[in-house]
Length: 308
Image (tube, rainbow, N blue to C red):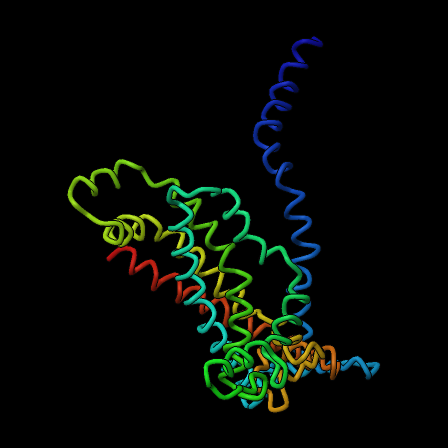
């Protein structure tokens, strides 16, 4: 009787182990994501529908009023323009430079490991220290960049005062920090390309540039799509570089005329300088939707290019 009863129990325990174990293995991730990811996301959505100011003891339900106000906010549209401008100026040159560096590192070079480690060093340095150093390099009176321009007979530039000049300076910070990171991703993808493709192309008389254009780039298209989407997400969330670019003062306005204030910086100003948590939450959710749309557009365009 005991053996007869233990048979179904063992089968039930076996089925539970086979079918239930995978869910137990992945359960910690979903619990952690729900605690530090999903809950703050949903709570931010709720706060965006209220008029919550940290200086006031109560909050009021306002519905979509914060979003309606955001659509007519000139400062928000200025911040969005600055964000798109810096994203374009930094992402396109960054990915092109990363492709070139990865192609060079994939060739037979002496001390390849040294160079591969060297391109990653900008990414592991402190972004705060790097931005402050770049702010000094692009200084108006004693900056090294203006000193170099003076050597070639060009007039000095007030990099922080102008819209385009400040966008170029901040974009160079982003390019300097993330180019090596993307180059290593491209390099890892290049090493998975079968060598016989290049050997056959060499026998057919194809040069290095032709092989790069006809073999390397098509084989790297999935990786290029990935880096383009990730760069889009990171580019629209940029905040540390413009926050510290103004001589390291940490001014959230992004310059005297908000010439390099990004959406992330405007969110920081509304939430942690003016304590308008409801309005800042509306900015956060709007930025999230913009990032999702831009990532989908980016993915669809690059996927269409890949198919063609």
